Structure formats: C-alpha cells, structure tokens
Amino acid sequence: MRVAMIGTGYVGLVSGACFADFGHHVTCVDKDAQKIERLERGEIPIFEPGLDDIVARNRAAGRLDFAVDLTQAVREADAVFIAVGTPSRRGDGHADLSYVYAAAREIAEAAEGYTVVVTKSTVPVGTGDEVERVIRETRPDADISVVSNPEFLREGAAIEDFKRPDRIVVGTDEPRAREVMTQLYRPLALNSLPLLFTGRRTSELIKYAGNAFLAVKITFINEIADLCEQVGANVQEVARGIGLDNRIGAKFLHAGPGYGGSCFPKDTLALTRTAQEAGTPLRIVETVVGVNDVRKLAMAKKVMNVLGGDVRGKTAAVLGLTFKPNTDDMRESPALSIIHALMDKGMKIRAYDPEGMEEAKKLLPAGVTYTSGAYEAAEGADCLVIVTEWDAFRALDFERLRKIMAQTVLVDLRNIYRPDEMQALGFTYESVGRGSDAAEGLAAPAVH
Image (cartoon, rainbow, N blue to C red):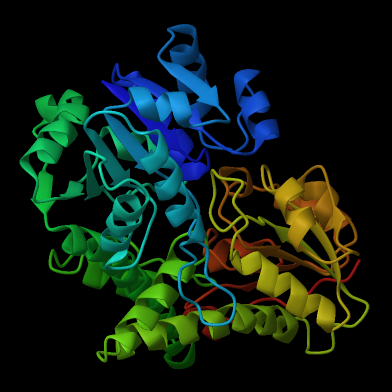
C-alpha cells in the first residue's frame, strides 16, 4: 500500500519508518525544508534507538521517501496520516489544532480517488468530526474517510512499541476505511495482536484516558513516597507490594521527580479543559496536574535542604536533563524546573546528559555549564543530583567522585543506589520516598 505521513516529528517519523519496514511505500512530508534535506542525507533529527537503521534500510530499498510538498504523495496514497504537533495552546491549555486543520485542508485539495485520512496526532474528542467538516468544506466531492488511530509509543522504545503493540485502536464505522486500516496493519496479524475497532470519538478519548491514568499512577506513588519519608517506610517496597496485585500492576509505580515529556503534561491538561467545557470536570486529573507541577519544585527544595538551606554560591552537578533516558526530548523535563529553581537561589549548575544537551541549551538559562561527562560535571561540586536514570549513571565510580567533589553529597531522585552502600562510602545520600534512610543516620558531608 502507499502511505503519506504528514509531519516528520517523533510520531510521524517513527510511524512512517515502521510502516515502510512492513513493506508499504511511505512518503514522509514536512514543510521544514532543512529537516527534509537532513533526512535525505540520512541524518535523524531525533534520538530514538534503532530509528537510524530502519530509515537507512528502507531508504535503500526504495520504500521510504521524503518531501516538502504533499501533493504527489497524497494523490498516490491509499492512506494519509496526519502526524503534526498539537502543543498546549497558550492561555487556556487546550490542544492547538491549527496544524491539524491546515493539513486537512491541503490533503483535501490534493486527494484523488478514495483516500483514508488518519489522525495520528493526539487530539481532543470531536477533532475527527471537525477534520471531516474541513475536508468537506474544502472539497465537497472528495471521496475521503476520516479515521482516528492514536499512537501509543514510548520514547526510547518506540520501534518495539510500534511493531509489538499492546493494542491498535482504530476509530471508524466505515467498512471501506476499516479494510484499508486492516491491510495497513496486516503484517502484525501473525502475532494475533488486538486490533480494536471503535467509534471515532471513543478512539480519541482512549488516548487521553490512557495517558491520564498513567499520570495518576505516577503522581499517586510520588505522594506515597512523601508519606514514606515522614513515617520511615520505603516506597520501593510499597510499590512492589501493591504492584504484585494484578489489578494494579507494577508499571508506572516508580517514585521520582514527576512526569514530563511530550505527552502526559499536555494531554492531561487538554483532557481537563475538554471535561470542564463538557460540564463534567475530572477532579482527579485536575489534582494530578497541580501535584505534578509542585512535585518538580519540591525536588529542588530537597537538594537545598540536604545542603543546609543556604545554597548561594554552591555548585550542583546535575546528571540527566531529558525527561527520561534513551531520548533527547527535553519537553517538560523535571530537570528544567529543578535547575531554574536552584539557580534562582544562587546555585551554580554543571550539567551532563548523554543525548539532551543541545536541546537543553535552548531551554535552560545562560550560566549553566555543560560538560562532556559525569565526572567533569562533578568536579568541585557540592552535590551530585541524578535527575534522569541513564544507564551511564548506574555504576558511577564513587571513589573517584570522593576525590573531585567539594562535598560528598548525592541526591538520587531516581533511587538508583542503595542507602547502605552510600553510607559505607561516606556519602550523604538523599533519595525519594525511603524514609528509613534518615533513620539509618547517614554520614555528614565530607569536605575536601
């Protein structure tokens, strides 16, 4: 089949490359000419493990093309995917759908013959209805079906998620569109994967409801972590104890500095706005949004408290800037709020991330010192703060750190290390939700 993918951001590029790997012919379209030129040279604008190999393989096989103009790609396509950005709109938090509607108009003008227009972007309930209205208004004679097919890709594991999904949700009640979508995903049928056909509005809501529920789990365990610190309990053991209950499950029960990224923050906010306008406010999700914002600032206070409160002139070595490992995505990363808060109190920041520093430079204030590695960041630092759990930070040489740091203080916001290990090494160690740490009487900072 022939596929046109409108938008070469994270979702569009990963989806287009994977569809090509299934054997379909895919043309990825983007108005950013420089991005298309880079892609044609084999340069991948995002970091996603394995994506460069899939793009190169399918380019060589002639199954994956790139273009700035969508006309030919849409004209030849059986299915056209809209995979453009839907950022939070300034002022009210609603999803900005202007790019979606603009793409719909251009698709309507270029389409020939029966075409399935698939909304892959994350959009609020009812967007498919408006996309269809825009298309009918632009081309009343167009033979087009509008389908919802939300993505469920985790950054850092997107290719695995696309090729071995938990579910594929398709929102349509039109038999012709259903047949096209079945053919597109047929290469996955050997795995007997659940292809869930539902109404278009239901499909749109499934995406938002899923992300909101996961955000609730994250926020719940973070609040339990705060309680653990006060009563002397261990949040990791609490999470294991409740996660073994199959009704709850162990995933997304890792206490930390709060959620970030391209999905959860904007999707939870957009869902609350939609619900408020519908007269059915989602109080739980509204609370989750507020708690998560406060959570990030609380992590900065944790760093300040372990250093005695007055941190002006002191230096923090921040390891990990992206919102999660195995991506270069800095959107809504907890590191942004933490670093801003520490700098507001007069701290100096030395930072390192394996993939995210170029993006971080666009978002963090001037004055942050970016280093080439964890140990360079730790040189002369009063504390080491682990914000993102990259593998590179899971086996640090603490004997080396003792020699180069001004104070042996580790604030571990991802609970990578064990309190007893840090105590034996003479480090003051602060983690998240492990109240027994304080009870064990950890050593005071060693000043060199």
